[in-house]
Length: 166
Image (cartoon, rainbow, N blue to C red):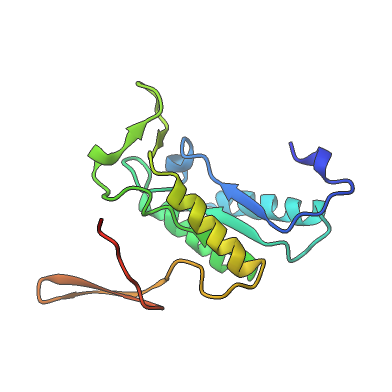
């Protein structure tokens, strides 16, 4: 699909957005097949554009019923396994994570998509600006720890976080 672009074109990075329809079938990558598949895709881009350090941006699939946590965790681990692979979260594409917030493109369609797509696009742009163009501190914060304290959940991030609830 990308072969026509190989000859004579240069790119600054690649974006990988895993289809949601088959993400539920990946079971914690116990046999390593998804890891091998993703590494193959990443290496294909890098080989095709003759750039061993080509940045690859993974758009993390959003949470939904049938879309297990372990697949999002696997995407996180894949990004951490390579110095030039970055994870762009889509967890905030909806203001809440209840099934009432999910919107289907067409009735009866099995693939789910959030109505709010611009936050993911902006997060991707921020990650590209930071990792490709050197603009500092534009990526989403990373969770360092989660603790239960006095009946509350306390989440500690690697940077200061401001949340707009409006």
